[in-house]
Image 1 (cartoon, rainbow, N blue to C red):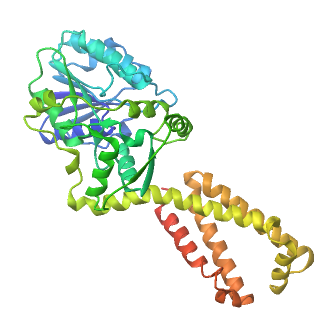
Image 2 (tube, rainbow, N blue to C red; image 1 turned 180 degrees about the vertical axis):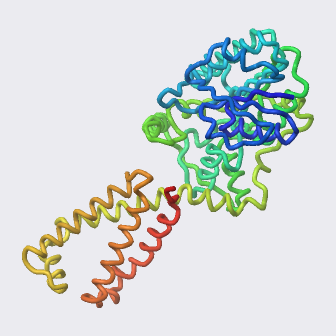
Image 3 (tube, rainbow, N blue to C red; image 1 turned 60 degrees about the vertical axis):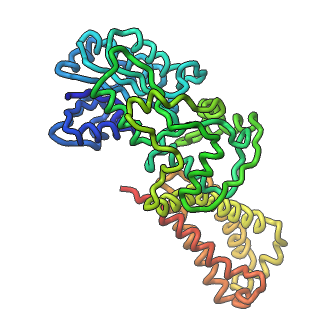
Length: 430
């Protein structure tokens, strides 16, 4: 079978493409930038297609010659620049589906989203609009509507694993919202089954796990599978405060949470699984068995780092900012100058050293919070050098501070270890 596939650089589209190639099928992968296509081979061809520019049905018809089936797996959670919901989720797929009907394509599978029928967010409304176009065409195929998709390397799964690994959470309604997570492998198997034997008319199928569970229960299950014991401890969070926080988070690059995703989470995400089971020929994997024992250790480490690294960055930032405030006058300036005199600095040089160090601490605190990723390795290196320098100077000129019962110098050792960890976790620039 020769299949045209969109969204192949995404989680679901990429998994479908790999499964089709493993079964010996031929692929035409419609991608905006063929250089981003990580799947290669004699049975896989890249087709340059910018769906944000909405190619019309006539253009698609020329590309559909010899194509047996089409799978549209394009999806974005957040709009960014030219990548908008209406173009990518609605108008571009609608033109593709229309061309499929005109070209006599045997089967079309549209990867939509659970909740698209009746959803109120821009994400859901755009998915629903494309679904309606496909339903109205004389084609064989299906609209598949996955629930929360679990995949070890998926960004949304990484978020839920991080939440599960946290010791305490604050969630609206204490996490009582119903979810029905489905494993990526089951989603792929369901799509392959539909391609093998497509319904005679376009059928809408919810791709969901065997039963709904509360969000808090799903997180507790993931935590148990990570071998972390009971938890997390869930505190109530007012819905209004959650929505306000989501709106702020939506302004941060790379955030998985914004006003729309918050609304979708509050609405819940569940549906009957019987039609999906019929196409799979078996029961989908329950959420309680998503994490194999062999993967628990690596996933646990990644999940813990997911919440511990931001917390560690915040703690270091507060340390530098507090140190700057103390040096700028919260600690008596004369006492600071007396300490500098023991290092050999007096008069104007001592003042320059005091306020220069305070300014440097302030700058490092701000950079710890807000430095762009390409700068961070240098920020951590500067912090290591500064803390090490302070430690050497105190050891030489003020060695009695090593014996202070509050450990003002010995605490530099775990601080340097923490900074070194953050430095090591930053990816190197190519």
